[in-house]
Length: 122
Image 1 (cartoon, rainbow, N blue to C red):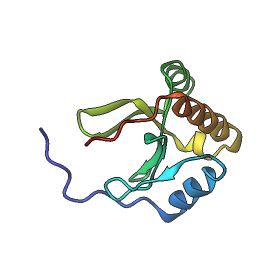
Image 2 (cartoon, rainbow, N blue to C red):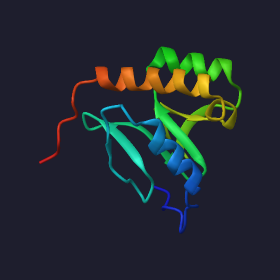
Image 3 (cartoon, one colour):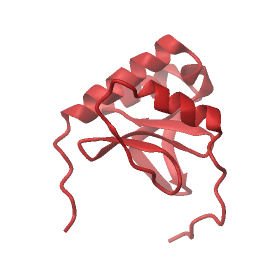
Image 4 (cartoon, rainbow, N blue to C red):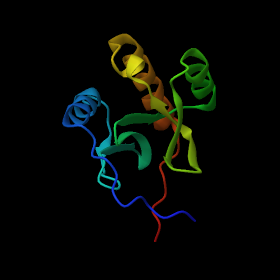
């Protein structure tokens, strides 16, 4: 197993504020992970930041569609070789486009809301 990086880059405050404002009205809970803001719905990870990136969870159908329609989108890989296949990093062209971002945020919230609540480990 590869070690954690000694120091990850902090998420820019503007991206943290954008994320916080974006999830208003969505029944989700903030739970920082590795020092980054990450939001959960029914204890299932939904959307968050990692360094300069904004990632969200999508159904397989929606992941394929987003990756097909945007060359800059890619699967979330927080550590080299550790791909989280349900999660896609949104490129700036999507994050900076209100309509496109709202579309993918809605699809993600709907998908994650449809998942059974995650059972807590004892």
